Image (cartoon, rainbow, N blue to C red; front, side, top):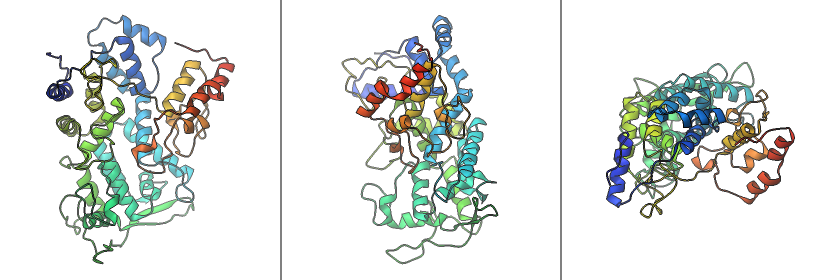
Length: 429
């Protein structure tokens, strides 16, 4: 059947579904949409007043209007600070990262996202950062992981969406990366050095001397972009070169990776899934859709808010979870919405909102939300039980979304819900 198209996202999704002879579900009703969009964009349920006003609104563009409104809120910023804080492993760590350093790092990230700084500029500043971990908080990226090879792997996995760990000791069995390419890319980070500042809790990050040797050939690896060319290292520092290459509009990895991460937030599934395992043997489910998203992301000057807006106003995002005979078994092509579990932080915040009670977390005032927690090591029994990321690795798999018996028992008998009801919280529909 001929289907309404609200933007380019629908065009590419419908083309794929047409090839598969799959008919997408109908669009969800307003009561479902207002709840979904609040949970996805700002991590809370709509208030009864907000819900009532939306349902009564006769403006045919009211869904676009609520998306535009929520994207500009502080709560929207907090959601994405939390997501990127996980990937950047913002947490205290033994003698490496103090609580002050972690908090400053988190605040730096929040300021950048709140100002809607182009995302490639954020990453470029991060990879080029020098100075004290207090005075220049972005340098904590190099303090979280001290080992050069692990640091290299983290850069590839977080910003390029590709896992190159296997190529450290042999040619990657499921991808194009060779052992030689691994050490050539690692050579960009071989000159990162650290020293103590006057404050013993602070470290100074700077560029010194250092080379990366291929353990197989015993030769010094020449810095080379992953899947790219050998740059002239006499014109800039190695980190400046790799930061410029990675954040460039024509980089084949960065925009696609960030676009895929954003998409997965709203659908519970990436176009490439897992989002950080891009390889030849794990192709995107809809290459044309991913190409379109990444192209528009670049055209928007890496303004991720505009890409979020595109996704949320598309017909594809607004589909119902109710299936039809043609799409009941579809799990990869976005022909219907899926029932998605709430993340640990958002679930706790929603319970607090519904019961009209307040949280108290280390380093935050009473009434703060779980999504605002800066330190990955600050947690509660509830957050651990429901799978909050520990930020020990950059893997997207750290956020656990699988159900468990302990979760069910805790909701039934645990202190999180029961204590809030005893405090006089009123359960709101």
